[in-house]
Image 1: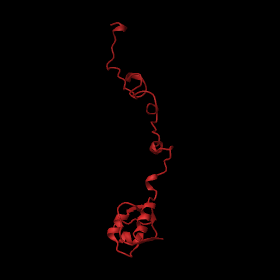
Image 2 (image 1 turned 135 degrees about the horizontal axis):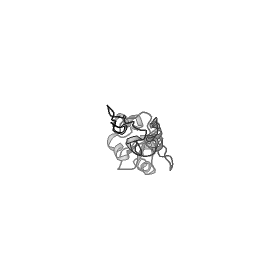
Image 3 (image 1 turned 180 degrees about the vertical axis):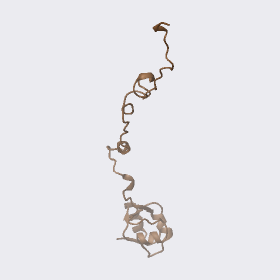
Length: 141
């Protein structure tokens, strides 16, 4: 027997070490470059992505939550109120013409016709509505 004919009793096996080069190839199973390919794999905070998605230019000012007045047409007041009645936000909410929201203002617009004499208080009134109410003999304070 010569020295070059000697063989081991057991095979020389090595355990695969993931992420350290070796048999896994170029990127060692970590994809390509970037944050997730580095050690530690710390992902940036989620709230940063939320902040980035909020529009920041061109007049973004939460327009949806501004207090816009509730709109009521003159025609609705003519059908729900009688001669000499006082029309104010409380009376409109009591007659259930519109649903009540605390602290909301009411604006009367000129849609429809009115023939009853009413007194309007504590409401915003458009020019057309004012003309129709005064023509019917009503007043606005």
